[in-house]
Structure formats: C-alpha cells, structure tokens
Length: 411
Image (cartoon, rainbow, N blue to C red; front, side, top):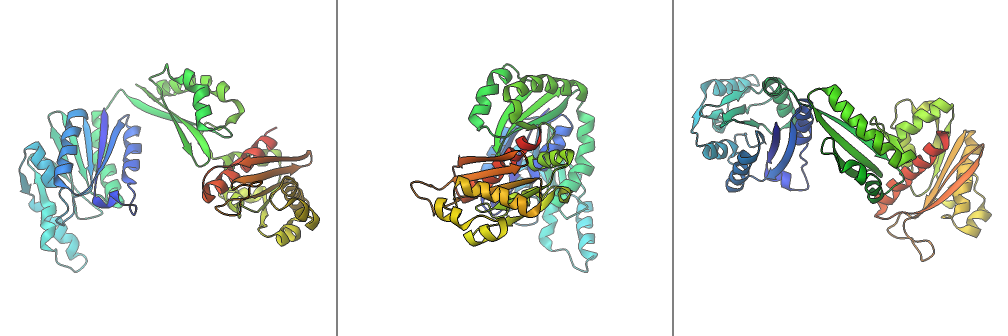
C-alpha cells in the first residue's frame, strides 16, 4: 500500500515552523510495510488544497491530511475534503458534548466557533481526541482511505497510535519494510556514488538513496518483503556487495554516530583522550561528550583561541607561533602533543584553522585547517581546505578530527 501525506497550514510555508508530524507518521507507516511516496505542504487556501487532494485521490491508496481541523475561519480541511468527495457535512452531537465537557472541566464555557469541529462528512467515522478538542476523521471512499488528523503533534501522535494504527494493521499484510544506513567518512558524496552506483543500480529492491548529512555521507537502503527476515536478507545481500567498494571509509552500518564509534574503540583499547581546539571553539569536545559514558575515556579539552592560551594551556612555544603563525602544521602538532603531555592522556588532538568569513589571506585562505593526532607511536598532521561558511568549516573540522582518531585507534 502506498501513502501520501498532505500537511496543511500557511505557517508551514514560513521559516518559523517545521513539519515534524510527517516524519513521525512515515516511521509509523513504514513499520506496517506502508511506504510514503509523496508529501505536500499547502497553505490555508481552499482552491489549492482541493487541487492537491484531487491529485492524491488519483494516485494513492492511503491519504493522510494533517492540520486544518481547528475552530477558526482558516481551518478549511473538513469543508474542502467533503466538497471534493461530494459528501455533505453533518454535525455530530456527541462531539459537541465532548468539547463542551472539556471546557467545563477547566471552568470555562465552550466558544460558539468550536461547534465547527463537530462537522463530519457524511459516512465518515470521527476519531476521539484525548489531547485536544478537534476530532480526527476516517473516510472510506472508492477503495481509498482518507485520514484527517489534527496538527498539534501531541494530539496527532496520540490519535494516530490509538485510533489509526489498529485499523491500518488490519488492512495490510504480506509486506514488510526494513531499512539500513551505511555511514561513510572521508569521501565526498560524488565519489561514494561513483564507487557504488554500478552495484546498486541493478536493484529495484532494495532501493538506494545517498545523502550528505552532518559532515558524513549516508547510504540508505530500503527493502520490501513478505517477512522481516526476507527483507533483512535482501539488505544483507546488497550491503555485502557495497562494503568492499567503500572499504574502511565505512564507520557504521548499525546507526552509530562517528563519536560513538570512536568512543567504543577508545574503551576497547583502554585509551584516554584530550583535545586542544582553536577554530572549532570546543565543538569537538562537545561532540565527544554527547556520548553517554564518555568520561571513561575523555579527560577534557582546552579551547586555545588566543596565542597566549595556546602557550599556557597546551605548551605551544611562543617562538613557534611567531615563526609559523597560529594556523600552521607545526602549531597543530604542538597543540596535540602539548595537550597530551599536560593531561597525561594516551592521545592528544590539536585543531587550528581559519573558519572565516574573515581572517583569510592568499597564503592561508578561509577554510584552511590543520588537524593533528598524537599518541605514543608518533604524531600525524593533515592540512585541509574546507568549503562553506563558518559553521560548515567548524563542523567539517570536528568530523575529520574524529575520522583521523577513528583510524588511529581502530588498529
């Protein structure tokens, strides 16, 4: 069964409000083997909503319409959906009683405009709303299912779990959707695709999507089969072919973040870590400490923004800073070695660079970053030229520092 979601609300077309409901619904539908094929966001405009809904009726078995069930004039969904389906709206006394009782429990009288929330298309079922006043609506029409849900996430989630999931579970059988995410570091999106496109293109099941997210590349695989075991077998088959093509650039196939993987290696190797950061301003330390239990291996870090603190906190020689400048390979090396020595950590990391937007020169442009990892075997220093704005340069710096650390501690 294919589904599509229509999110209604002019506020969703502004930069001030995000549609998180569709992410929740997609996860729930996928757990039933139902794939969401299309999502549309439409403002509070009767003509446009009617056009979007008519198109949805032509192509999808299950249509979920979110929002637009409130008591105000811009809550148009009931009327528009009823008009497109050719069904009259009728008032449900029990709904009015429930809304009035909800207001009475707080010592207030129900406003007259709340009565519009009791209007339901002829032949439809209304769905109780335990978290708010607007009931949902379930309509069967020409072999299609139309579900109308309130917009507030708290109301939508409770209603969908309690009222819709059991109905849908009884309608679907013989199809399971299983997904897997292969996470890759150290390669650009284009190279990942170049390496694996000849492998995944012959497959329509599983399907493959490549995404760039948070400084990493993710290969998303989605398989359909009558049982979870058969779907997992399809995923295993394609994963086994993709892994050799990406090699040691893969850091996770089970959902872990790069900082979680690094933490697991540090625990396994019984190593400790300290960091000295300049241009990242503590972002690397913040990412490391996102992981529960990181105190077992992370001793701490110093944010050495000024040259004075590079010397005081990480022991960088003033002469070194004067000779090479703060953004240089020797200073990155001194930061890693110095913070390791001062904290008595097994491993030290040093980062120095120019995050921008200003501060760059012809010799040292914006985006130039030096990252160093030091341990008992020696010190590695790498130079990077990261593209993008200040935040992206900082994010990529922390990402590649973690990737250098992962490669260092896995062996």
